[in-house]
Length: 353
Image (cartoon, rainbow, N blue to C red; front, side, top):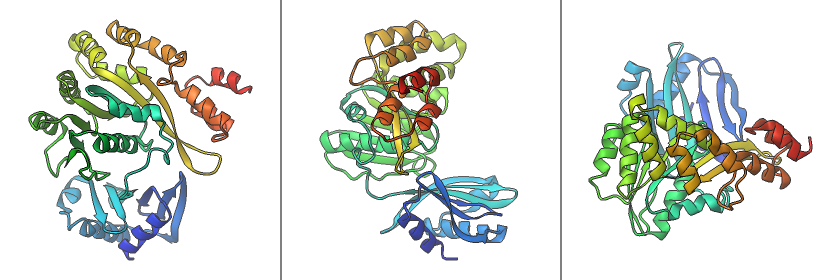
């Protein structure tokens, strides 16, 4: 089994992920649909050999840590083919992996249907901008587009802290320092604290995993830096609640006040099947207003969704109204719209169901 040839082939098929699991044929996902690469089921020995070859392709990465712990995340590139993000793991005692295919070329926002109101967030000079959504919803891609926009238009120092690195940014107008967690630095918190001594203007923090990292990120945003980060939440209100709830109860009041001052925008997104068989994004966009800052400060986050829903601003839209627009343009079906709505009953009335 030639692993390199398999990776080349699934890349040509525009696959997003390749699954290597014992007991099932090699499988890849393209446009949200699973395809078998071959009919032959992968046995534990063949999975073991396949993943060892992946480690060999990744500049002979040391496999010892994976064998000892059962988990490993890393990325590597095959020149002329693509970049790959690997999540290797053991299941039922055998080696397994999910390999994400990442193109060398940076994505173009227009081709990905990222709206201009999202791309305009790249012009913010300081504060905290969050991109949220479930795993595989395109958060990293949206952030890569925002970083590339800043890189192309501003003279800044951009530091990205990622686990692992996905998109590679060349130096354009900006200097871009990309650091991979566990390869270039110990962990997110250590890297973030160090980055504040490296004269950054913009910091991309791959994930805010604990309250110490969140606290450091908010302090960085408070002191004049622009911080981009992600959370696995859906909707602006639940994102704000998640951040506040990460802190001890005794600190939550102060955190609410601090967050109300540093937060600039929350973009929540999901990937949906379109009517022509592609996967397209849907967005909820919340841009901070004095009224929303007051709601956060006063602990009334449950009112934020209603404020977004009723907004007439061109820069703020609820997920349900975005789904309605996609349906009206013929890009998604009624079923898809209702399945992903936060308030299906109200959206159903608008759709005439």
